[in-house]
Image 1 (cartoon, rainbow, N blue to C red):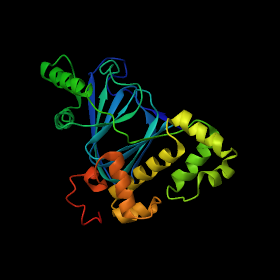
Image 2 (image 1 turned 30 degrees about the horizontal axis):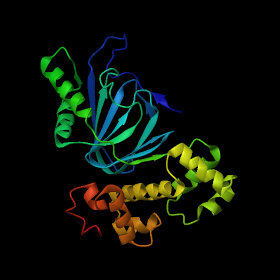
Image 3 (image 1 turned 180 degrees about the vertical axis):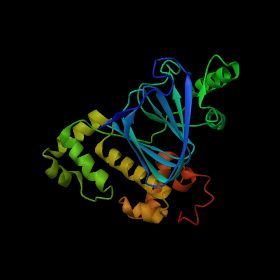
Image 4 (image 1 turned 135 degrees about the horizontal axis):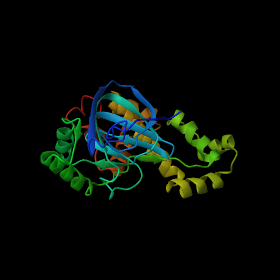
Length: 268
C-alpha cells in the first residue's frame, strides 16, 4: 500500500514554511524506498550511483549526474544500484509550472548540478529571503531548459501485455520470442504487438531492447563487469551490447556511468 507523506513545505497547521526544501541521503546498494507519494513536485538527483524509479506507468533509470522529475502526488518507489548519493529537491507545486506533469529523466548541466548541491545545504528556502529567492529563481530557470533522455521503460495497461512485461522484468535475459511468450499471456502475437505500440509508443522489439539496456546499466552500477551484464540481459557478446548501448545513448556503458576511467578494469 502506498504511503502519502506529509508536506515538507507546510506546517501541520497549513502555514507555508518555504517554497523549496531539500533532503540528502547516502544509501547502500540494494536499498529500496517503499512506494509513497509527496504533495510537492520532486527532483531526484544522483550525484553518484544509479537509482531506479518505479511507478504504475513504468520504470525510469537515473544514472550518476542525471535527475528524474516526479510530479506531486505520483506514487513511486526507488531502488539503489551501487552506493547512491541521493539529493532531492521538493518544489511548491506552482513553482515549476512549465515542467510536464509526468515523470522524465533529464540531463543535468554543470551549473544545475552545483545549484542542486548548493540548495541541499538549506533545509528549506523561502522567497522572503533575497539570497534564497535568487537561488530558487536560477534553479527554476535552469529546469526550463533541461533535455529529456530516453531512460524510461513505459508499461502497458492491458493485463495480457502486463503478463509479458512481468515475465521479462523477472528475467530480462529470457530468450523466448514473442510468440512463445504470448502463449502464456492468453493473447495472440498480433494483439500484443498492437498493445505495446499503442500503449507504450514502442514496438515490442524496441521495448525489449530498452529493458535489456536499462537492466544492464543497473547491473554495472552494482559492480558487474560489462561482459557479465551483457550476457545476463541476453546479448550474445559484450561487443553486441556495447554497440547497441552506444547507438541508443551515444557513448559506451562505462562512460555513461561516469568518466570512463575505470572502463578497462571493469571489462569494457
